[in-house]
Length: 174
Image (tube, rainbow, N blue to C red; front, top):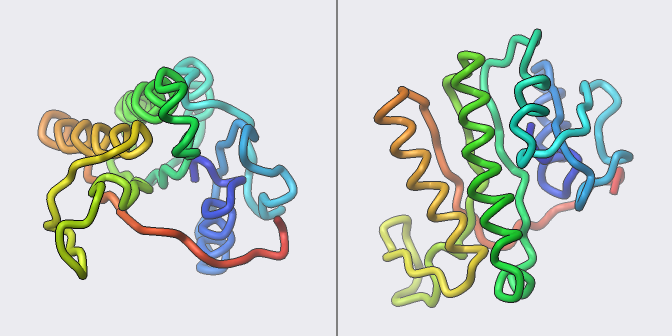
């Protein structure tokens, strides 16, 4: 679970553990919290922008699938520092996919965002709503979704992107 020390990732990791899955959490702790990592999970402090660190993280582990929840996510900051978002959300995601390819991991679930849609053209919005991001954050999410599609065609990586709106919930670990 990449980004598994964050708000959504830590809950995902806990649910996976409840279902008796082995869980490895990779997080740089920039926005996540070490205390949110379930004690039963293996924790690796690493960053998706560090290709060598990702390679090391995958080495000597049997990983069946990746859940990618790590991202720069502050919309306002994306408009004043787009380079930061492209480096983490796009280039970091590509680093992750390349590590997956190198280590024969062929499945990924990507935490995208409804920010890819931009301003609603109709309600309720469906998955077929046109994508027109109005901020860099949303742009990086749809760009990575497109990268996933091409990696699927070229390398057979199976993927799904979840475009949710505001996630809500709670964990006593945060």
